[in-house]
Length: 367
Length: 128
Image (cartoon, rainbow over the protein chains, first blue to last red):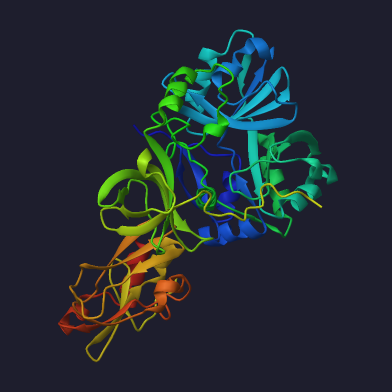
């Protein structure tokens, strides 16, 4: 069955910029403008703006202690303060990952959840099924535009947009600012490893904000192509590729985003996996050449297939191929040689510590 | 889109410059533009025999890998070794610095079966 691709409020802007546009998670999205490599390097050295309007947002209102929210997500919530965001997961009963998400505590009785585009309908069903009648769930994805400004110069860009107060935002904190006649939510978050901000604004204002951001000569538009190479250099997982309903957070190496001090859907199963130790684990490989390993390549060690690549690409920052994928736990060690093997390529590589790229500015503080 | 008049072309977007029994081979401006940033090239070794329309090289962009087909048959006599470290030359200079290999042709009559620049121009216009 063919379904019509969705478009963001910025679709015409991308066409005007002659972006290369392709389907992504049911959306028609800009993959590149100038080129993936140039956009990647620009984001690592200056600042880029990304159209991330395809992602989903839910607004949850109701008494926190009775909402059931704590049971639906894996991260600790009870010690969060207003203006704080936190990364974690929604799991199924078998501890498989329904989605990875960021929760925003706006107030003790008001939370925003930011989820992946392709999973939004499933996430909504999961929320409506498991949150109590004390919690009102609004899917605000359609009326909410999300523009990400990412790169070491992002703080300067945001200062010009919303004023000096934005300097006070610490990593994974958010606040509301006056912008284009609205109170917009700005969080110091991102998916690139660089200093960055995510701006949530009414969809009807998206084009105006896009133009305003691009008036800054330090900012260029960047597409999903370089967003993928940027996140892979940081070893951030991409839902549907590196994590999904048949993988759990522990084997994905993301246990620190799970809080076992509470009960949540999947917690019992996940605790069993924790106690037994996961059978497979995410490992990271640096190729000896510029050749890019691809999703689905076998991970071969000492002549034995021990795992499968879930994400692979050329790394613009390291100038070599990089990949991540699950291997049998006994093979998840740093410094092992591995052949990454596809139908037409065998790539020599070595397992390394994450992240691949270690000079990201994401946590850097202002002066 | 640049399509030099002194070259011949294939429908797979390779070009060849043929003279004195030798063919210098690369991929066209159209091909490099469609592929995007090229990050890796695998070339055959000198001495390898290649056959017209058969795969002889691989180019990779950030997003995908693509096969490159030989426009003519023959033996590889030179490869562009600079592409190993600087495959972006294929993007910036597809007909000059971005050449792939030189082939000593085994059957020069194959050249007459390739497209001239006008025919190739017409062919790629038809792709849109």
